[in-house]
Amino acid sequence: MASHSNRIITIANQKGGVGKTTTAINLATALAAIGESVLIVDLDPQGNASTGLGIDRRDRKLSSYDLLMGTHGIFDIVQQTAVPNLSILPSTMDLLGIEMEIAGESDRVFRLRRALFSEEAAQYSYILVDCPPSFNLLTMNAMTAAHSVLVPLQCEFFALEGLSQLLETVDQIRRTVNPSLDIQGIVLTMYDSRNNLALQVVNDVRTHLGEKVYHTLIPRNVRVSEAPSYGKPAILYDLKCAGSQAYLQLASEVIQRERQRKAA
Ligand code: ADP
Ligand code: MG
Image 1 (cartoon, rainbow, N blue to C red):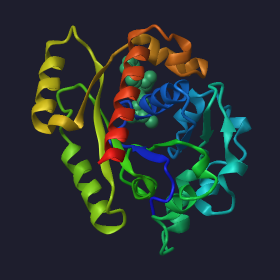
Image 2 (cartoon, rainbow, N blue to C red; image 1 turned 180 degrees about the vertical axis):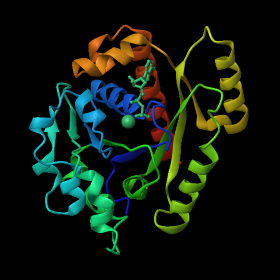
Image 3 (cartoon, protein in one colour; image 1 turned 180 degrees about the horizontal axis):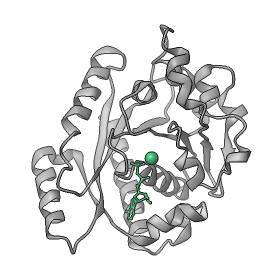
């Protein structure tokens, strides 16, 4: 299947509010800033990645829904964002109903994979898929289509809870439909250095998960949380803030891991 040299990374965690969308937007922006051609696929019916990148709901005529339904291709749906080199397949509420619509189809988990292993998708060097906060058919499609999964974990007491379920799901996808699926890495988000517990959580997670955890810690940063209301990635809204700088650093770790994989 790996006939194209692009990388498809699914950003997943069945918990909401852990930083999936923020990571998708800012990692994508950082990769685009260093000259990669990047596509975000917004698979969450909530459409936060689309909104956060300034794509108005009224301007979303076609969406990732149409891609999954197979009625349209990437080039029909794609929208350019304000970030050079960064495009998005936006989400619409139609995605809420897709599970019912394709539940009976034998190719239901392969819909995204088929669309992303195409000539059109080969135009992008990185494709990041932003998942909804559940293990539904959309997330299964995202994992089936991906080379690797990037997992944001919020620095809180229950950070590790639910992670084993996530890793089990990745294993199951590997055993059934996507044998080469890898964990790109686990990124700790919303780290607050003033909170003593946070450091303990970081140490805990590193002890349990070792090298899978990126060195970069994403700090809790008010500029990062403000940016989406301006329809901008934090990296455009305030490049100098600690959150933006952390996402730039994360991008270089992601690239480094991809290089190592290529060399292996
Ligand atoms: P998910 O996509 O996993 O549901 P989001 O990326 O939407 O999570 O983040 C949840 C909320 O936390 C959002 O309001 C977002 O702006 C905020 N947030 C995410 N990362 C940070 C951060 N590093 N600092 C401050 N707020 C953040
Ligand atoms: Mg989200």
